[in-house]
Image 1: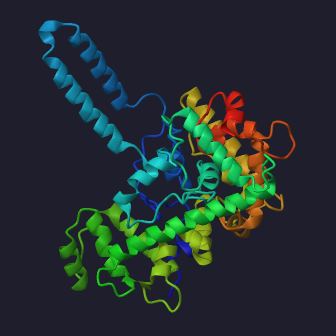
Image 2: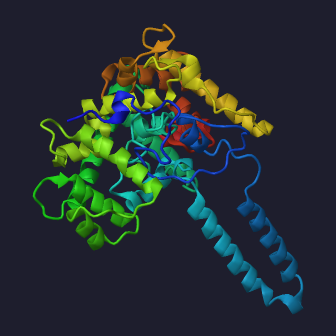
Image 3: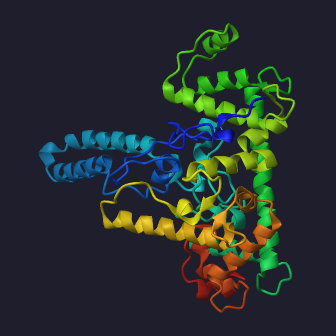
Length: 426
């Protein structure tokens, strides 16, 4: 089998598909930067938590205008009949805004809610993995490895007392020797346990999806079978597509969808263990959806990220390459602050965790070790870093008051009155 183009670096360094090879497909809002964008900068960085949105969107302006009209009309008895129409218009605008929101702008809980819509596509976000498929830092990583699947009770509108109690229950589970302190070793073991939970969740999800794309139930999925299901999910008639593929007839597919198919086939080849037959078993299909489950697919993911970020073609990453921003200028201070935060976070990650030998260069091997969710050494480093962030008394352990005070870091939700409630919760 010939190696796919991406793994050989066959594409021109400036080329970037219209859609990621590992999509949950995302809408990209216009950047507030002025200038061109190339490589990984095109998709990933403009989708990093909406950090490139300068000012309010057109939809938000329209919503403001409608609310103003509703308020004015409601004060005038003779015009009250207009109020239902204004509210109806507001509802339409809100629906439009919701449908246009990029998937990567949402939290992990929101991403889980929309997963079913693209169930046969490899997810862009992998729970418990440090980098996203597009090379972004996984902003939810610390919550994922601290909470595992146990995210209920930490939503924004959750009752604070219940959330505090739940957090202290987790604390007591991590604190294996019950000395009311969490050591780095205890945190390391907990991180490995929660990562294993994410692995089991991915296996169960993949099993369901495999059955969905294996209609004849023979335990193998061909590329054509997957292609039919993929195009059907894009609105094509499944029976017509299957018939045309069977008869080797040309399919009428738009350029963007064709680009996605080519990238998916590239990934399909990588997941297909020798001897290559383009038939994936259930195990191979799991690595197709979740490359963290396969050493070969994890290496493929690393090569893709390096290819996208590597600017001089040496197949390794320097600090400037890893933290580089899209070409152009920012238009406002908010955008500049987001840029500064982007650079600061990635510089810290590069220097403290990814660049293992601290020589200023990250090799593919170093990036692979960093991204391997089952790497115990990395889990220990991560445990030490998590403790250091909240360790106010500098005793290299986490205590209940510290965990409650830094609850936003561990759970994504800020819990108030931590000191007053800590003894009560225990």
